[in-house]
Amino acid sequence: MKVLYTANAAATNGREGRVKTDDGKVDLGLSMPKGLGGPGGEGTNPEQLFAMGYSACFGSALALVARMQKVQTGPVQIEAKVSLGSDDTGGFGLAVELVGHIPNLPREQAEALMHAAHQVCPYSKATRGNIEVKLSVA
Image (cartoon, rainbow, N blue to C red; front, side):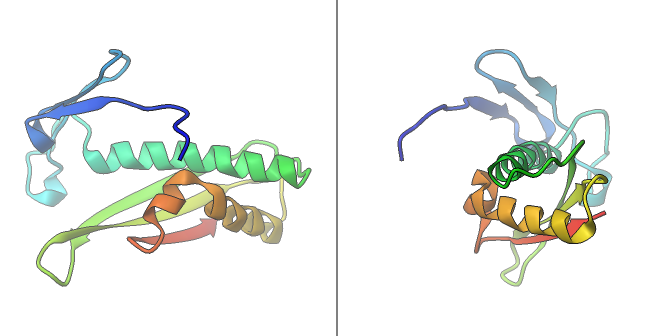
């Protein structure tokens, strides 16, 4: 792979610490969600951060595919729902649902774009075969 960009971030003290990027653009507190037995709180969590990254990347992949197909999508929102659960080995796993909000296109065309974007999105490529990713159109 020819590297085009490298992001650099670090987490201190796990799910109840902080995450920071080396350039200082992101510096966030983390809180363990109540659903995972934590106190909740004002901080974010790794699943929310992953959902933000995946939805942004997938939206760009969808825009690329639409340009290649010469499709005018109008406004597009990609909602990523990242779930953390226990797996069969006693460990934990992730599942993702990506919901496309593409109101200017017929459902069939929006679904086809979602599936095409799933083939080119780097996050989708990284997760393929590792976690369940469900695609839908609202």
